[in-house]
Length: 178
View 1 (tube, one colour):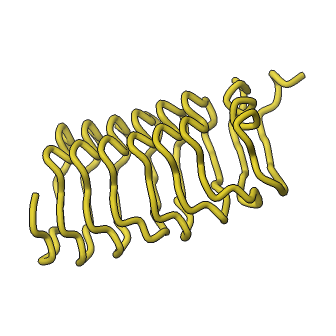
View 2 (view 1 turned 180 degrees about the vertical axis):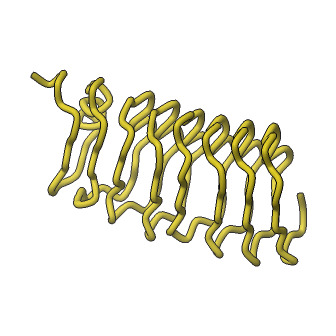
């Protein structure tokens, strides 16, 4: 019975739109391991509103499109080393998300990317990061520490609006606008 499945491991191949829809429909799914999956793109709304707590992304992944995890229940995410592009609102309102590791050469954190992720406490950005767009981390109420690397050039308007716990921010000398 598909309603009782709590863990999925994709051992090979790539997922198509129907496969993503099937994963979204599995209401008791807790863990998905896509590490061996050949997908290079995490498509628009791939796991939107998913109750899944753990997702291991494909090693081949290069891009996460908009709304990919919108309002999902994930607790942590490791963005693989080949990912260079994050879509608008891709992690919007993931209220359980408390650990984010960006290993890839991401240059831009788009608007509303992590907005409403109320459990995130700390963010360490990759050295490749150039810009953080407006409202990217809006209402991340638990965010208390941000570490920027040299190379960051711009922080958008209200990128960290309503981050009530924010106590420590390290700004690089490369910053031109905020």
